[in-house]
Length: 378
Ligand SMILES: Cc1ncc(COP(=O)(O)O)c(C=O)c1O
Image (cartoon, rainbow, N blue to C red):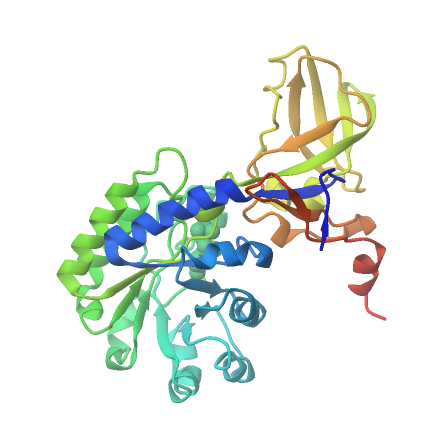
């Protein structure tokens, strides 16, 4: 790791002070509701930030073996893992790093749960509750969309031997405010009580947008307390985005200006390679100092250097004309951003950095040709 104060773009910069403020919210929920909170590393895997996060959280939850190993090695504390499908060998290896292993269905449970149990791991079953208020991206991010592959369906739950299940798991939300969190908790209490009475823990998944403006944390705390009082179980939440929302930016540079019916600015950051969610969700990330198209005097369409015509970030307006070399700062770029980057067209990965609480910016990576080449095999 190198230390520097000047920023070479493109680079994602975490702001540690803002992360700590978000973590304080998590701590309050944990303490006041008496629940556990795990970091969903799929949203934010930045080991350099983990020492700070371990003080506030109970552990990590992984999407599969590699994240589980990282959580075990770099975060410590509890490691939970859920994947829609495992191989036998994967479950065997997982028992070395994760002490909470969640299965997606009766089929997976029947084949692999004993491996986990015999190794001393707690066993979870993901249930598809058929409830969600997730609206982001239509059904793209709704775990309970019709035909979803996530979680056992309610009609099969009577076939489960609940005496052998430790954790009842639902993940049903996406960027949801408290109405979603509270709604899910109440829905589960009203519809799945007979199963919950047989387990020791209920995990309400992620999608709780805890630190988003408008999220009523007290409403969440109250709902968890009511749930715990009724069922006497341990409650776990596993947010990703909600822990790191608004804690960092993607810095980019204007490389070239162009015109084709509209003014265009070509950046060293790309939607396709650095912010894939811009295209997948899709959404338009905010830029510091920029307005909506036409709102300020000079409007530009931002795009990356890749050959994909649709590698367009959005339209932005500025008070003054842009020029090559100008820095563009995209806000709220910590969740589902650098964990999803790729090197299409040989585009360099965006580097990673942290602005620590003393203001020093520490560079965490130096991705270059070697990183691109390494991923292409020998
Ligand atoms: C099972 C599970 N848990 C937790 C999360 C984290 O969700 P979020 O980052 O929206 O809080 C996800 C996200 O897809 C998930 O699939």
